Image 1 (cartoon, rainbow, N blue to C red):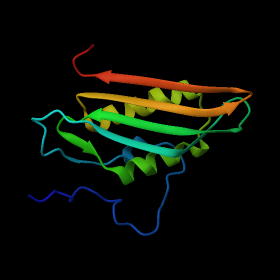
Image 2: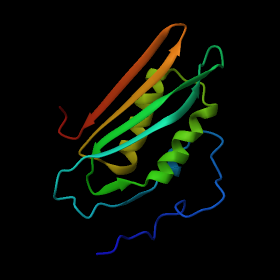
Image 3: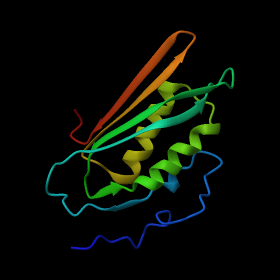
Image 4: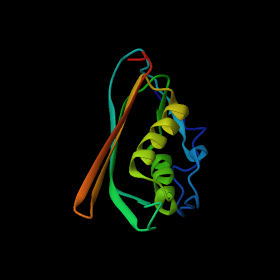
Length: 138
């Protein structure tokens, strides 16, 4: 059983061309050959950065994506490019997590998905934000 990689454009590239601004169109997917089965995919990065919209200072953190795929799965290198594009994006942490969730749901139509951002302390306060989508509406 071979995977169809014909629609993937980033995987295998040797010279990265990271997007200058956040663009969900960089997200690529592939066919989930096991769409009749519920299983969970977890992707995690410790290298997330965005900018405080007020001070312009960097907000460092981790992003965790947990989802039960529908007919499509997120290709991990395209997710890396997408998340990397937030490095120059002035946005609150609550906004960034919800925006990532919305863009990923739009890209792959999962059964369920949760995005969690765990941001390093600034001013003595760390922030964790989780946002969830469930196609059953619950």
